[in-house]
Image (tube, rainbow, N blue to C red; front, side):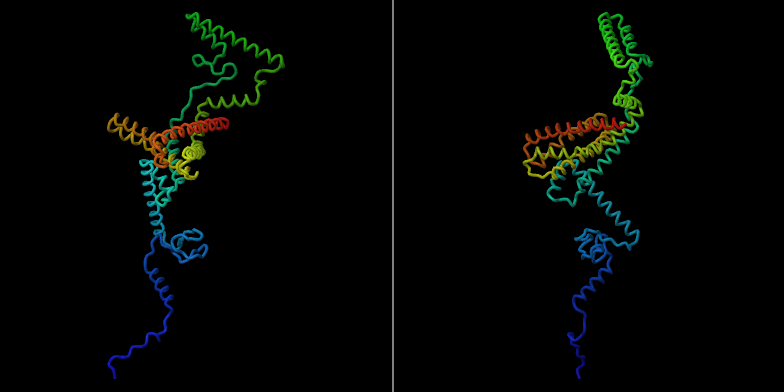
Length: 370
């Protein structure tokens, strides 16, 4: 009798299929280990049922999120995502400030994972810029020392007291009594004003003797007079200033596509599409906002060393602000220095006219809406 027992035939032992065994082992391993915040919590998408291959569904795009988790776990995951975004934002801002055109070239070349999307970055920076500008100017909103008076007394005061137009002429003539030539010129102007006034009164009387000057005013003239009264008051001036400042983000956002349109025309040989030029515009405007916000801070810190250092810092900041678009366009479109300089000047002039026109239209709309 053999000492060692005969081993059974392995082929005769019933067993589960190999694929089922491997699946069971994988599920057990997944249950034993701590899943990372970026690993999927489910095998299939809860929205469309597609098999998951990562934290996002490749079919519908839904993020795989397990609601049955502790608050602490969710909090630390959100904290991790926040600091990841913050680090990316900081790196992008440094690159944008001191490496002109690099972010735009990388974005248009498809290297977008390491960047905050251009429009999102622009919106974040522009909101911060105009918010800080509003806080800075809130206490120093400009007002103008003007005074509006009814009728013939409008705008003329002597020692703070309102006077008529003719009284103002008489005072000016009396003040120049020692100068014969000036006195004669003022008297002629006074007589001409008197004649014009009488002629207007005569024409109004001929039209309807019972009609007064106030009744002859049209609705448009009355509106203009009411707007003038409001504009000359400190409260009206403050309201217009705040309205204009509040409209600036929208105005710049409206003008920004024109910047892209101008670069599309000037650098059309680069064969870049309009959306790529729009990225150029977004990055450039973001740089301007960031640079204007940080420039005063650097000057303030340099002032602790000496006034001359602060002046040099201010000069260097202004020079960089002027040179930046030239270096940016040179890096992005690879034209010669002469062509890049010429096109940058043309672009600056065209865009400045666009902004001036936009400011003028905005001011008129705000003034009329007061």
